[in-house]
Image (cartoon, rainbow, N blue to C red):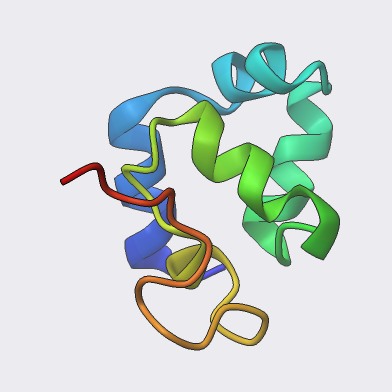
Length: 75
């Protein structure tokens, strides 16, 4: 994960808090910071932090467009 994305996430909540929100251990979340969020959890992670970090920011290889994976906006 890019340093910029890590900092943005940590401004929202700690690794321990993110782990609590997702039912994961802080050590697991720390592994995501060192490597990358598993593909099957990208949307859950993004949702857990209110989409303040987008799926594209977490895994641009899986979500190549900046709006990929974001919830639909109500008109």
